[in-house]
Image 1 (cartoon, helix red, strand yellow):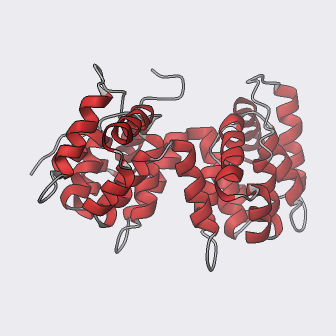
Image 2 (cartoon, helix red, strand yellow):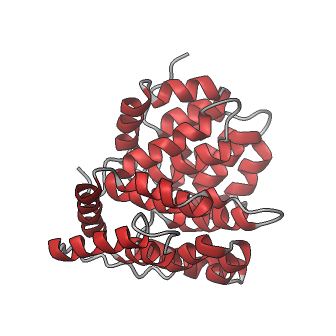
Length: 322
């Protein structure tokens, strides 16, 4: 077991970036494109290995691999490959930037990223965001969101969560009582108390707090959140709750949501697969099947097609069927 879970994508053994670069060039040169070769290389290498392949590609051919991929592929298959080729931090930054660009804001993306990452990850993303877009992530969030939801995101953006892993049962009881007083025991809700506790306490301590809350009220803390909050702030707090109690379940629900109903939210599907395949996607697959009664592969099969589908299969660690 990895410290955070089981990936579906591992670094390739006997990795030869020069050979990969030449094979990719060959797959795209001349008439037509060998998409299977693109999948075989790009979808079966770690993000770090892909960066090395891109350096070799540029060194040997004086061309940019991402630009070549863009001219040889299209639609979701292209989006997936280009996303995979970006350094993972740049990819997160681009997703956050896209979520806030133009009219309206995709709050779900902000929640999915900021409510689930560690302090170090958030700091790294903030620094890179400034380099890439010449703007502070925090000020962008401030101008794109409002009210309690804005305060939640700003708190998460400071990345000041205790990560010691130390637990204090008495303090947990105290916090659970404070949350009760701030919510269910009063008229209206004191959002700042929820914000403070859910953004500052370490995950192990939060587990204990939620348990204490349940003991005191006889129902889950998630139920309390649904009763006390609505809209984006509710979704954000529930995302933190789910990441504390079962992160794999949270991401399984994101994958399910991307494919449930009519049509597919490919951007969301691609993002979850890209960001989790080297971390805990094997656990997410198990959670998906437990929660929804069918395998992730069967859902991908029903919702996607062609090279895009086969590329996703490779990333989620499934063999191609017809």
